Length: 339
Image (cartoon, rainbow, N blue to C red; front, side, top):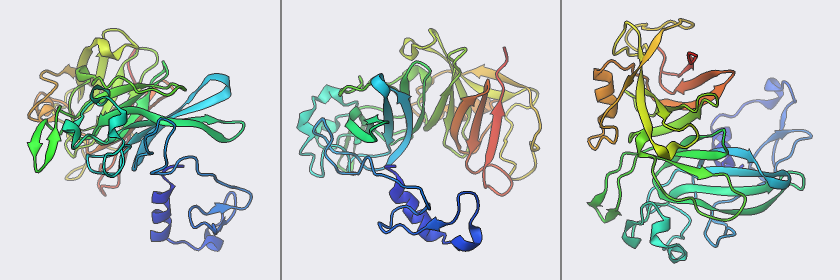
């Protein structure tokens, strides 16, 4: 619901004749509020709006992105939501950072010297599903950059990903206290509180997009939103405890090292074709030179063009590549883990 403003732009840019396109639930009826047109008998309600004050005294940040819903206590639903923000954008601290003092510096991953704090992170909405009302809303992770996507875990947390490889330093007035390009774990809690801003460095530093967790093995699969990205998997030392470390690997196609899968120049992979795959271990995974994908490709890993959404279901992993395919209009891949 928080992202409907973007949908409005889409609807305006691609008008359709509702009478001609009416199928299923019927034609769309024009919304007097000019927000969301719906078929007759349907309605919507806004549960969160950018800039509103939350229950912790901070403000609802801009640019909501990937999110997941969790079952909470007493019939409540807990929604953990990313915000894809950089310093200086409309974050939780106000336009002049007047609310930054409500937090201690160590509650943010990157305090930015108190001048250019990272404005990304996550918020949590606790929603009473039966009463259809918001019980509370609060910041649940603070001080990260460009939290784009991520994924839920079977043990009740949200893995949020930084889609950036920003390094620490000072440049053009921007103070960056820590390296970025990591994933963080946010518990799906109903009570107000911030997650410890601890990066899961063993899961690699790169332009993270999304994750999916195999509930049987605890293995985490990760996508990379780059034109020459890889598909990764993280094998934790202790399933369900990602902070305990583990091994990061990349997928390679058996007998075809360094396979480029986008089919732009030639049809490397046919639709429906089944490929046997293997996994190779990666080293220097914090990659200060942002070359993890390049070194993995040189070692034989397959290249995927802008890996984005990924999901586990039916004992399989599905993921999308935004610009894959001969028309660069996208690909959907299915991976079946071996026993």
